Amino acid sequence: MFYRAFTDADFDALQQLDLTVLRHEDPNFDTLPEREREGRVRTSLAALRFFERSEHSFVADDDGKVVGALFAQSVWQGDRPTVLISRVWTAQGAPQGTAAGLLKACSKSAYDTAVYEVHLPVTPELIAAAGEESFREVGRYAVRHLGTRGQTAPGEALPGTLDQ
Image (cartoon, rainbow, N blue to C red; front, side):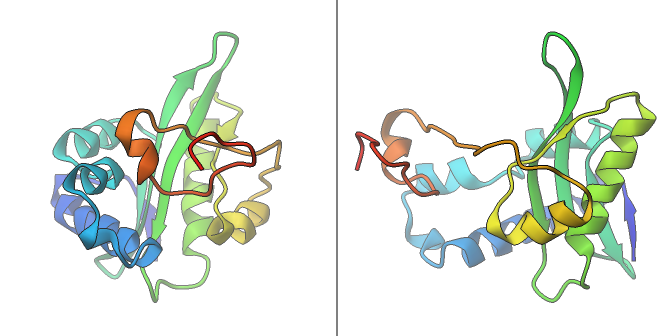
């Protein structure tokens, strides 16, 4: 298996992987309101084109088949650049170490462009891979979905959330 930047030839596979992961994360995904489904999908043509050019997004290629993907971008924090990973996917049945390999590829691309911080929202599925690649936990990562999306968006409400 190897890790590489993706091209438009990978778009269909990436869209399929995105939907497969979304359905695994939420078995009721297909029954959610259309607006919520659209809000969770990260592989619109515009998003794919953006991440294709980001220099920090990769696919895990196992003998010509996409078995994982990582979307990341450079972000200027005002005092230093960082690479922000927005999503890491692995296909069911992907080889052991696929997520860690994607994180390693992204970390190397960041280092090669003189960016020395990589930020990652650590999901329970990514804890082992993030640890293997020397990520450090510095706090929780939370998302607030505004408007009606707050009623159906993924994730667990934090204690004291008014929307509960």
